[in-house]
Image (cartoon, rainbow, N blue to C red; front, side):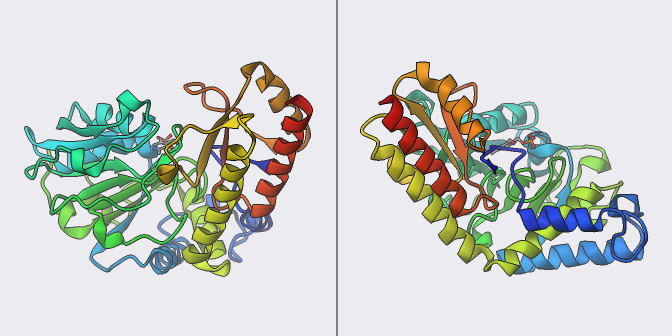
Length: 358
Ligand code: PLP
């Protein structure tokens, strides 16, 4: 079967197979990785390797810390303003879909939120043009979601926001291709799409931002404390950390992020071309230059066919194509673990379905 889930999403098969092999006896310890102390030598060595692999894959400069956080990306919608803004400070939010809208609303108790641009009036079908953004040079940071998992829009280039630190929710497109880390102040991502199991949040943060005072808060919320304690201020998500490490190794063995970018471009192009070439049977209304490479929502020309499409696709081994309830229709998520072959099988099914029901 091929799994097109938006998240938690498919992991690379070799990652799951290796985790299965190592489940009962990890690293010659005679016990599972889940049963090891995070303070032990074995776990510490693994954690250091995982960070080194990520730094190599993403070319993370030395002046950035890597944190292995918990709480889901949603918790960090609130925790980021707690850390980066003092009482009374403001932050700019670019609202381009469900998740950046939620990031802004969860931040609101902790920072004065300025929605500097939004495409809500366009139903999030396009990006607000950069020259319309009303950025405040005194803002604590500018927040974007690089890819909107539900609405299927993605920044194709990192926007220039001047000297204000750019904070990016990359939950659904991290590791999908190379990026210039130095353009960002802080990057964060829930793990459950391109990294590993849910419950782990990867964060890459410029070290000078860790020195910001933020607002008064308990240590457990303060990123600087997490960085000072190698993300082990309390018991971390050890299992998630381990699986993330297996994914990073798989990425390294498969050509790194340049190869992923090429694969992801080919996968998305094949599916968009199939939708656009279906004579209106399938539709994706997103402005083509900002269509997501990771999450492709589409509708059938007649929603009365939705149930048959889902039933037949599942019977053909194509799983989790049902769209998000906010948009209806279908959505195919094409994260790193989904091979080109899966998309080839999907488009063959779609063409055949259209022929039979057109
Ligand atoms: N941001 C984006 C872009 C997402 O797709 C999601 C959904 O998983 C979230 C944030 C929320 O993540 P979590 O469920 O880990 O809090």
